[in-house]
Image 1 (tube, rainbow, N blue to C red):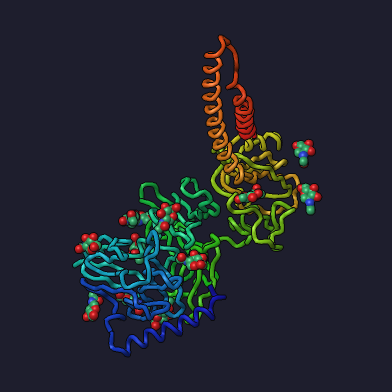
Image 2 (cartoon, rainbow, N blue to C red; image 1 turned 180 degrees about the vertical axis):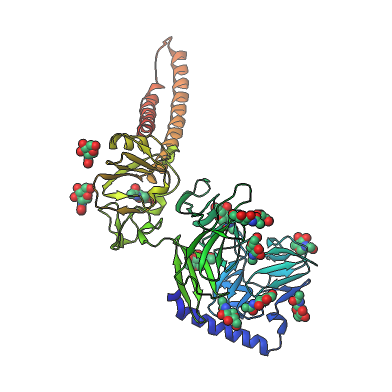
Amino acid sequence: MCSKMTFSNHIFLLLSFVCAATLFSGVESKTKDNLSKGFTVTPDSSVTSFQPLLTDSNANFSLGLLRVNRTQLALVILHLPSSQQLWIARTSRLPRWSPSTHVFFNGSLVISDQHSRVLWSTNTDGDRVYLSNTSNLQINGPDSILWQSFHFPSDTLLENQNFTSNMTLNSSNGLYYMHLGYNFIGLYAKFTPHSGQDQIYYKRKAMEIKAKIVKGQGPIYASVRSDGFLGMYQNETAPIDIQSFSSYQQYNPGNRILKIESDGNLKGYYWTGSNWILDYEAVSEFCELPRSCGAYGLCHPSKGCSCLNNETDFSSGKCEAPENNSGDFCSLRNSKFKILRKSGVELPYKELMEYEKMNTLEQCERSCKESCKCWGAVYSNSSGFCYRIEYPIQTLVSVGDDSKVGYFKVRESAGKSKMAIGLVIGAVLLCGVILVFAWIGVTWRRKRRASRAYVEGDSGVVGVGPYKDLASESFGSIELSERR
Ligand SMILES: *[C@@H]1O[C@H](CO)[C@@H](O)[C@H](O)[C@H]1NC(C)=O
Ligand SMILES: *[C@@H]1O[C@H](CO)[C@@H](O)[C@H](O)[C@H]1NC(C)=O
Ligand SMILES: *[C@@H]1O[C@H](CO)[C@@H](O)[C@H](O)[C@H]1NC(C)=O
Ligand SMILES: *[C@@H]1O[C@H](CO)[C@@H](O)[C@H](O)[C@H]1NC(C)=O
Ligand SMILES: *[C@@H]1O[C@H](CO)[C@@H](O)[C@H](O)[C@H]1NC(C)=O
Ligand SMILES: *[C@@H]1O[C@H](CO)[C@@H](O)[C@H](O)[C@H]1NC(C)=O
Ligand SMILES: *[C@@H]1O[C@H](CO)[C@@H](O)[C@H](O)[C@H]1NC(C)=O
Ligand SMILES: *[C@@H]1O[C@H](CO)[C@@H](O)[C@H](O)[C@H]1NC(C)=O
Ligand SMILES: *[C@@H]1O[C@H](CO)[C@@H](O)[C@H](O)[C@H]1NC(C)=O
Ligand SMILES: *[C@@H]1O[C@H](CO)[C@@H](O)[C@H](O)[C@H]1NC(C)=O
Ligand SMILES: *[C@@H]1O[C@H](CO)[C@@H](O)[C@H](O)[C@H]1NC(C)=O
Ligand SMILES: *[C@@H]1O[C@H](CO)[C@@H](O)[C@H](O)[C@H]1NC(C)=O
């Protein structure tokens, strides 16, 4: 975040300019802290980065239209001095930056596209849209808050924002998220999307020093506090856990955020007035991140990355082709793989992974080989623990201990599915040929029968020979792939 300062500075200058221009042009309604029913706006084609709609009373935060990749629009809340994005209205796809896209408030705050389709809505019937000085966007009814962005966080939590057990904090690339368990904060990776089986790679269990979790007192929640810690609570009286930041006990109200980054780390920052300073990192070792060196990568603590396959150069960019690295091996089309072994490797978060005790490495490997959901296994000869990896292989960590051995499947399909289609087409063609031959044969035989009283001839078999071979070959390949 901090390395982007020059870029941010540019945006900041640009934003200041836009704000100033708006102020001085007399269009004051655009920088108010609330919107009322009937408000509607379309993106301005002359805006290149950000079109503010609402700004909080301290001018720290602004809700507005962000121009993404020149052609697209996102409704976001920015921290104005740094252009740091704090919240986004998550739509399934981004609408176009064009006059036909509308953002309006009719009781609900709504984004609609050129066909007037609703892409996003708060589904409320409120009176006002208000942006608080803590960056909480609210839809207010006559005497209550009907909707608030603090209940629908994106990838960032603001200071004192309550993160409850029915929320997820999703990284902007959608690969990682934070979620609360009964007594812990967990970070999860979506290695196999849509499987519902996400891998936990970080877990912070509540220490319960100042307060204990009481059964039946409701779920826990987490919150970043002004004096520099990430707390877990069951009620406000006392935290059940404290994770202190570098600036612990330095009271710095309103200036802290917690963000789940695109690499899966969870980081805390505080605003100095000109800069966001890194203040906390959940995962402090680079190699402990779930994808530190990418798929089939090998992370060497404080020495960087290489590939599990020592014949692949890490600097080439990818250790294995990503198209070969998804799903599982359960469909016939995708059942082929070759095997890669590497000793002296360990899973980065093995203490959070399930294992089974086994007597030998062979037993461990076999249990993975025989399961089509298994992508690999790591066996520790000293403990006898066999860790089966049921998602595409990510990064492993290099350890000095050669008795820790990894077994990895590497997908070998691609061309194979084309071959299967080829086989089917071939078979269909052959059938056609056989039918034609059979027809010719029948006609010919009829003719022959007509001329002579002769009952013999297996002309059809001519075609069946190669057809049988072909069939046995394809059966063979099925058996082969099943046996693997
Ligand atoms: C909303 O903004 C108007 C000015 O546009 C202001 O007069 C009014 O007090 C504001 N209302 C609230 C509830 O903040
Ligand atoms: C913007 O474009 C870049 C490069 O073309 C792409 O990687 C990125 O995903 C795009 N962003 C969005 C939000 O579509
Ligand atoms: C606001 O507009 C949306 C989209 O046109 C519509 O579905 C919704 O019913 C409207 N809400 C209210 C409170 O009028
Ligand atoms: C934010 O607004 C609240 C009232 O809504 C006020 O009590 C508080 O002092 C304000 N904080 C700052 C930093 O302006
Ligand atoms: C967070 O939750 C506590 C306890 O329920 C509550 O007192 C506080 O107002 C909440 N904070 C926000 C910002 O909603
Ligand atoms: C989450 O749970 C709280 C109570 O713990 C509830 O008030 C809130 O409405 C829930 N939010 C969502 C989005 O379901
Ligand atoms: C965030 O991730 C969770 C867990 O995968 C998912 O259920 C949820 O739909 C995601 N939310 C958004 C807004 O993408
Ligand atoms: C809050 O929790 C503490 C200890 O966990 C308990 O003693 C206290 O009664 C609780 N307070 C409320 C209001 O539930
Ligand atoms: C918000 O504004 C106040 C007053 O201008 C300032 O002291 C504070 O540092 C700002 N906070 C952030 C996060 O920019
Ligand atoms: C790669 O590792 C294998 C054993 O794991 C070893 O036999 C081979 O020599 C290594 N090749 C290179 C280029 O280091
Ligand atoms: C594994 O451990 C057994 C004894 O538990 C030992 O005999 C064997 O040599 C070890 N193998 C390796 C590769 O370290
Ligand atoms: C990955 O797939 C490509 C085709 O998409 C294929 O050419 C290549 O051999 C595969 N790589 C491996 C390591 O199997």
